[in-house]
Amino acid sequence: MQNLDSSVVATALPSMARDLGRDPVHLSVAITSYLVALCVFIPVSGWVADRFGPRRVFMWAILVFTGASALVGLSQGLGTLVAARVLQGLGGAMMVPVGRLLLLRRVSKEELLTAMTWLTMPALLGPVFGPPIGGLLTDAVSWRAVFWINIPVGALGLVLVWRFIPEMDPQDPGPLDKRGLTLWGVALALLVSGLETIGRDLLPIWVTVVTLGLGAAASVAAVLHSKQAVRPAVDLSLLSIPTFGMPMLSGTLFRIGAGALPFLLPLTLQLVFGLSASGSGLLTFATALGALVMKPLIRPVLRRFGFRRVLVVNSVLAAAGVAVCALFNADWPPVAIFLVLAAGGLSRSLQFTSMATMAFADVPQNKLAAATAMTGTIQQFSVALGVVLGSLTLSAGMAWHGTSAPGLAEFQAGFLVAGLVMLAMLPGALRLKADAAARVSGNRPGV
Image 1 (cartoon, rainbow, N blue to C red):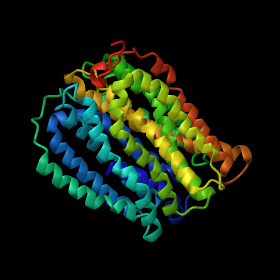
Image 2: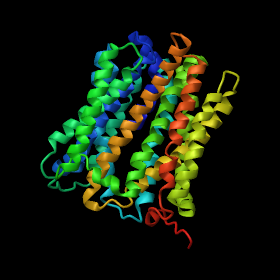
Image 3: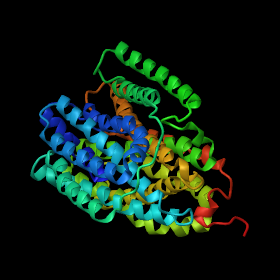
């Protein structure tokens, strides 16, 4: 449901902008406000799950997310839209990390790769069906309908959780690190808000500069606090585990670049090539289709080559799969665009699942809740920065060419920049040991 929501928003963005009287590029705040809320609230998800029981928290999170989706569809202005998206982010912040925690506490390390593959395959139904369904609903009904489809999905989810997921006893997570949560929440919110407004004429430049400065200061304070706290809300000691630290640090660069693609691609197809929302959705869903096809192949690929070789080689292929979108123009036949996007989806799916699985390979059982919360925070923060990267690149190109709307050249630059940012994860992947997470992959170098 969360992935369905994320994929339909970008497809419906031009229609939303017209209805609300806003510029499509500026309306990226509808995406980033939701992602910022995720980043702010995910760090507390592990503590809440331990304190009240993961099954109960999971059900409440689904209820909040579904109700907020209905409110987004009822929004009549940018302010109410952003407020409803923030509430939706609160539900999503508890929903996905806690759901992952329910799984991780019940599987062994040897079962981890298979479990993570099964976990992510249903989640890909959202991106597969989201763009075409979102485009068709936007054209046939309204952009509001793309949020209302979460209502039956959420209702079904609640019934299935109540019926099939057993209750797990609450644990004693210790006192809540309120200072740490506040510092991290303020830091992430200020940084993304500041970056979102650079060069956009949304706020005076001095407000943007002050926002970024305060965000940087809050980040330093949050890091210092987390290193000194006995039970920090964000446990930075996890980053010292090589198989966790690499996907969290270097992998963030990959996610930022990849996160720009779902923002840039629908806008390119609709604003530059003149496709309708449904036509755009039928093309962009090729990315998720490629990702879905890749899932059953991930286990044999990792068993054959191991995490290090896969992450090194595939980071280059995945970056090229995004950069090549800069070659798209109106003369390309739709079938060719579809095939290129599907091929890119294959490589990004392999990279995302490999990093997500390796991250938990060496995390001790007693730190799974903290690792799940940190993973969710960093992943969503990366996606938010990806949207910011895409919108900033477009704004910079418009300023450079003196135009009031982005054209093909601006979008081409966006795809190239995104690909280069993804490639920046390569040095981190090269530093992994050849036998990194071999217990999970089943690969034994030299054997």
